[in-house]
Length: 109
Image (cartoon, rainbow, N blue to C red):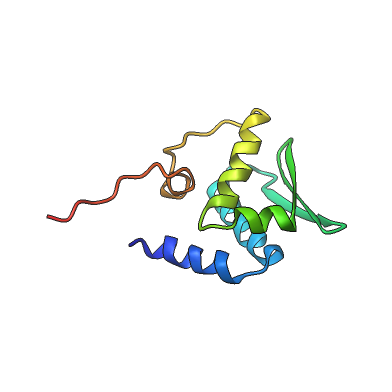
């Protein structure tokens, strides 16, 4: 089992939505560090607005709780940004591969 996935799963299960979304945004910031403006989060009236460049989405605590899985919230954000025109390679990193379930597990011989 991948340790990162295990830790992420534990965090998703045990953190409040407002804390978990900060973890997700931090991971997106590290992944897309080439984006000069970074990925930002704003909390307005209990709704979380995630912004990267010209792309933005709004998420409620209920939606975050519904999507909470090791990489479910990350995937949702990336898919919503993609719908708005953001492009990225699904194989660009191990993180992105985990978000989209696009990874190869090592075979045990």
